[in-house]
Length: 122
Image (cartoon, rainbow, N blue to C red; front, top):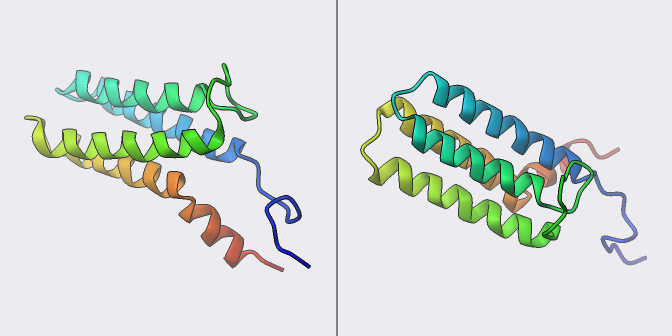
């Protein structure tokens, strides 16, 4: 029997979107307490818009497909890392941006879902 994506059960993409909404909320919360409000707010908006415009249960507008969303995830994470390293921001802002970028990258590359699938197989 062939193991294709249509035959095996998949976890919903809604969980991916929910984690991105939490990341955006964390970035907004950090922006409220930081001196670098603009940088963190722009990063939060980028993550939020990407999550809200994707086909999925929690998508508000459903403008992009899941595969395009995953590419945008990696691009947004890369931009957050570049901003953390090149802009004149505090160290706490840099750590926040890099931490959010790591989570978004793991989601975008599907590494979290592969790990979860492998470790919860019955």
